Image 1 (spheres, rainbow, N blue to C red):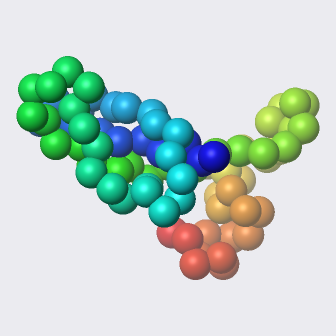
Image 2: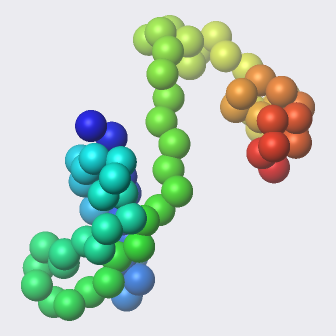
Length: 77
């Protein structure tokens, strides 16, 4: 089941919830019952070998998108 991050619009608190994809945009109940509103954050995850991070080129240093293409090559910024 995917993890989703939700940020409180009022104080910036971040919650991480395991939810089905069909419920990703469903309202999030304030765990402290204070009536705060949470919005889903765009987040990413990485998959790979344990040593892959050490051997992968730095995106900021090399100027490449995390997918390995030049900026804008995959539709990203």
